[in-house]
Image (cartoon, rainbow, N blue to C red):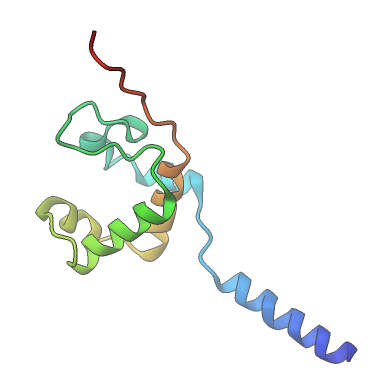
Length: 108
């Protein structure tokens, strides 16, 4: 029984170590290209570009994978996403999901 437990733990540890772990600092560095449209920290001040800050990590990752695969269409984003690795996508998604989104107050 002890041998089975040890083998199970080794298998689980090897699976975990093989998973891509998101890296916040790497995402921050990679986000510099995105800032020209999506703003510093993902808070775009141009209404035609979506704010990325504070979005769900899974949503951001899914969207970038969809641009990369072509299942989501946008000429600019598809071009950028085409060069991203899975690790790049995880890092960027992690970074933007942890940013504070700007609150938009209604006009008076």
